[in-house]
Image (cartoon, rainbow, N blue to C red; front, side, top):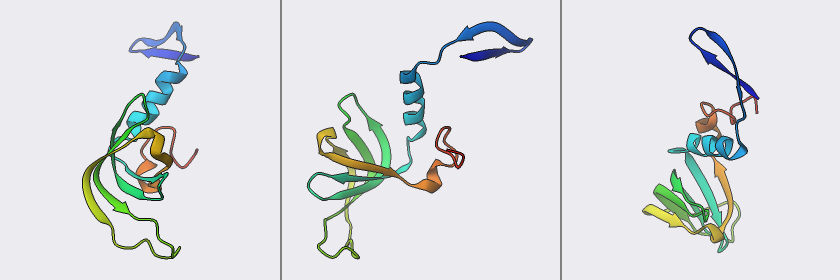
Length: 111
C-alpha cells in the first residue's frame, strides 16, 4: 500500500500498485540504456534498448554484433548492424550497463 500525497497534505485514500505496473515502470526506466544480449547461436548484440513486446522480442538501436569466439579473451571486431530486432526465443541473457542504471528507480546502487 502507498499513501497518495496531495497539495493539502496526505490523503486518506490508499491504492495498491500492481506488480505489472511496477514491472512496466522498471522496463520503461531501461529505455535508451546500453544492453548486451546473448543469443542462442552464441552471438552477442550490444546496443540501445528501444522497445520490446509481449513475445519478449527486443529492438536495439545502434547495435553491434560480436561473434562467438573460440578464444575466450578476444571478442573480435564488431559488425555494425544499426537497428536490430532480436526474437525473444533466441535471447539467452540480457545485461544492462551498470553506469546507466544509477538514475533508474529500482536499479540504483541501493538495490
